[in-house]
Length: 390
Ligand code: NAD
Ligand code: MG
Image (cartoon, rainbow, N blue to C red; front, side, top):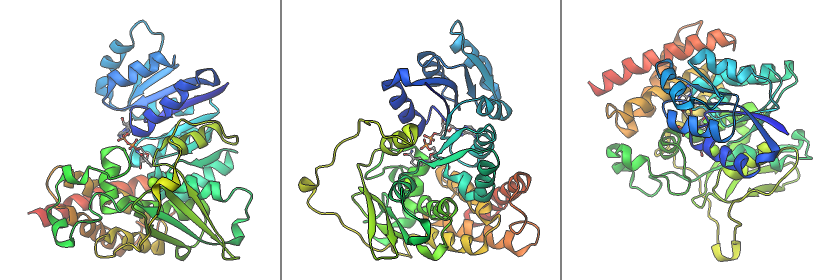
């Protein structure tokens, strides 16, 4: 039996993880499940999977969670510290599927207890890549990518020598607005940005796909995961979302990973690693599809990609500042205070302000520095957003 915990169990990745575990119930012993405000879902899954403990991120929802779990034997807990405590309970495998920088501390706690960390929370790698890798190394823990592109790269690298890798190409669907005329983008609404052409995901990452902030995070994630140079990483728009990544080797060969646009493939791969087990995703009929297409991303449409390059160039805590500013800019877009094309200028300005002062993005990648720069970047993002909106 594999003992597992799921951080962010009530979200899109968390629910897909639970779907796979529920189909193979005898193989898994569920220890901790965590969620946010969806107490009913959290309690229902904790009962169904007979979890040891269920944690809501919100302290003021503890009574609701207790009520929902009454008589089940499942412990209830709440708040940021309880999340870390839950992630510290001994298990073999932890799914890190909280959204945003809030996923970092619980993910590090899972690594500190030596668990295999299935990392959907790309923000951890963007904000704190060196710290995540070092924590895993120090505690003999393993980090497995869950992001579809990074799972694809990981799979293409099995049995290969990373020194023979020339380049890594990650693909992007192009998001909701890939075929919109550029001038229309400024007026794009939240509802329009929340409709992904291929993937069914949480709302925030769906909007980040439309702006390619998601791909920008993933470029940085690729660098941190596979320790390649920034110039070795390329992005290709691939509207069918079936080739998730390609690894180019020094003999000119490209290994592509092809699979359906269903996160259960990448989750299942990480859940069962190092073996493969059947996963109930659609089997592709390539003859019926006929063709796959690729094109270079348009720099004017996707300024986030340029920002990702600047972040990698700066290094240090620029990733933490970038992610935090991006999270706040997205909050402001969702709240109707910023236009769709105003998010990137906010993030760019925050990076410029923090980089101009010593002691911020050039500080060592330690958790307290990350937290400080994260807070500062959010504050600056609010100020810049207000200037633009006002
Ligand atoms: P989601 O919004 O659907 O779910 C997020 C989960 O985190 C929920 O359980 C929520 O309750 C919890 N949460 C939110 N804020 C929290 C906080 N402050 N503290 C603790 N818990 C909190 O998100 P998602 O789409 O499932 O994405 C989860 C992660 O996986 C993200 O990092 C995302 O980038 C990554 N990812 C998602 C997909 C996808 O298909 N959805 C694909 C690749 C990578
Ligand atoms: Mg992805």
